Length: 335
Image (cartoon, rainbow, N blue to C red; front, side, top):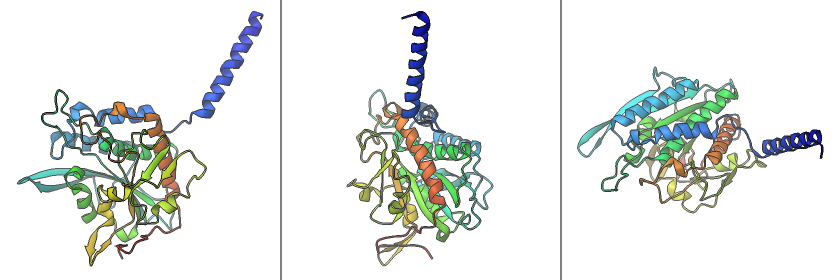
């Protein structure tokens, strides 16, 4: 083969390779590297496991507020800050904590006074005694992952200039590991009326792919409302799949911050609240609440694909006219 022919062949092979890569790899507004940087900071040893009431939780709340500000979120109606201060009693002492809340105002004149709440908790369990050389429970998947999913959605919306129809509230809660204290406080002191809230979507443990497989997630509470039925209509031919066969999903519905919205009050065996569900990729994983919950176990490429999907799905959902309601008699919407 002549040198010129060899160069042409190499060039053609390179173009073909780059074309194949372009066809198989999807570029997302928020990259795997972006998510890795955020997770590595929020679940770093310097955060010492983000125990409620610790100095590190104040640092973490300020960091989340800075990310919300960077992504162009505004403060909720009537608030002059992203920070919601509160306290709770624990073991005969008062624990001071903070939620972090931002908002994107809706673009549809007929829907902007309705709301979708996106939520996740950013606290964890701190230091585990007698755990050996590594005693920090970093809480990468539980739940730095959910918190960074919120940030990733906000960034995707900003970078792609997407316009949600309904207004979207981004709520990062502390106090989940202490009995969902932060989300319960927010639910009792919300900036918007709950009869105007379309649904709550909560994020927990979104960093792994080994349990369900790549491109898959599940939602808790599928049997309780029509939220999953509505969401299942989005991107039917896409590569991301909502799995509805997780046996523990109904049990886990009551174990995360989404229940604070679905059970605003309870009387005569009926819980009054808004339809909600937690999106996750792991169930009762063996690393949860241990020193093994670290970002090195993440599938960041899969995580980035999920953040992209959740962002597009949220905007689609914010424009839907289809009502989301309870499908069981034990729950009812607030009037």
